[in-house]
Image (cartoon, rainbow, N blue to C red; front, side, top):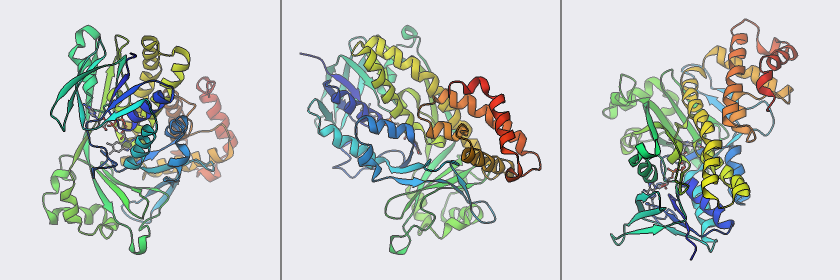
Length: 456
Ligand SMILES: Cc1cc2nc3c(=O)[nH]c(=O)nc-3n(C[C@H](O)[C@H](O)[C@H](O)COP(=O)(O)OP(=O)(O)OC[C@H]3O[C@@H](n4cnc5c(N)ncnc54)[C@H](O)[C@@H]3O)c2cc1C
C-alpha cells in the first residue's frame, strides 16, 4: 500500500497544499487540531480579515479557486491616512490602474479551501486531532484525537509541517538540533495587537470609505481598519505592551475612553460600547520566526508560518505561505516525488525570499507607524504614483512586493530599498513632485539601479 503524504495543520497553507497534492493524485492525510470551522462556531484564527494580493491570488488560481474567492473580495485601492489633525489623506497603492489589494475573510478563505478538499477523493481531513510529535527519519507522526482521548501514529511517505508559528513538526527538528544543525530564532516585536470592530452604519452602510485600508499612524503606535462584507470594519490596535501609550495604560473603562479621545477621536463614535468591547478582546503578541533547515532526511518539510512566521505589516504572511505552495508545485514538475531533492530545492528557493519578506515586514511596521504621515514620505509616495502612472518599468517597493508575483521578495527588497533611498533624497528638496522633470528622474533611477533592473 502506498503511504500518504501527511500534513499537520489545515490552516491556509496546509489546506492549499493538500488540495494541490490531491489534485496531482497523491493520497493526503491532513490533520488539524481545531474543530471544523464550517460546523463549529470558532474564530478562524489570529485575524478576522487579511490583505490578499497577487502572490496569493496566483496560488488560488493554481487550485482553481480564484474565481470563487474573487466574489468575496473587497478591493482596497490605497491607504486612507487619518492624521492627528486635519482631514484624512488618500495614498494610492499604485499609480497604475487595477493594481490594488483585497480584504478577505480568513475564515471564508479557509472554508473555501476545506470545501475544495472535500471534493477530492484522495484527501482526508481529520479535525480536532493534534500532532504531538514526529519521528523525522521514518516520517511517522504522532497524533492525539480530542474526542476519544486516544493517541496513534501515522506513517507517511513524508510529513509536511504547515502547523503555523508554534509548529510541532518544527519542534521535532529543534529536538534534533545538534544532528540537523538546526538554527531557530524567534524575535518578539515590542508591540502587541488587539482586534476591535466598527459595526456597520445604519442601513448596513460603511461608516468609513469602503475601498481603502485605513491607518491612524501616531508615531510609535497605530491603529488600522480593513473592510468586511456587510458594512463592518475589523480594527487592529498595534501598541507597545508597556509605557504611557501602551496597552498597560488602559486599565479600566475611563482610561480606554480617555486614550481613544486623545489619539483616535474620530474612531470614538464608531465603536459603541467601546469599553466592554475593548476588554472582551485579548492582547496578542507578534514575532518573527527564522529557522534552517526547513527539511530533514528528505522526509519532512516546513512550510508557511511553521517555517517563517512574520509580522503582519506588509500583509504578506499568508501570501508568502501561498507562494511557498506554488513554488513547491512548480518544483514537483521537475522532481516529482523525489522528495529529498524536491524539499531541498523548495528550501533553497524559498528561504532567501522568506528572510527578505520578514525584514520588509518589520521595516514596513516602522513606515506605517512613523512615516506615512511624514511630509517627505508623503511627497515620495506622490512622486512614485506619478512615475508608475507614466512609466511602465517603474514599480515602487510596495508594488514590487505586492503586485509583481514574478519578482522575488529578495529582489523586491534590494531594488525597492535602492529606489527608496534615491527618491527620499530627492524629496527632501523644495520641488513638488508635480513640478519635477519625471523623465529626468526616471533616467536617473534607471542608471542608479541598472544592475538590479536587469532581472525585472
Ligand atoms: C494580526 C495578523 C494580521 C495578519 N494579516 C495578514 C494579511 O493581511 N495578509 C497576509 O498575507 N497575512 C497576514 N497575516 C499572516 C497570516 O495570518 C499567516 O501568515 C498565515 O495564516 C499563515 O498560514 P499557515 O497555514 O502557515 O499558518 P496558520 O494560519 O497559523 O495555520 C496553521 C494551522 O495549523 C493548526 N495547528 C497548529 N498546531 C497544530 C498541531 N500541532 N497539530 C495539528 N494542527 C495544528 C492550527 O490550528 C492552524 O489551523 C496576519 C497575521 C496576524 C497575526
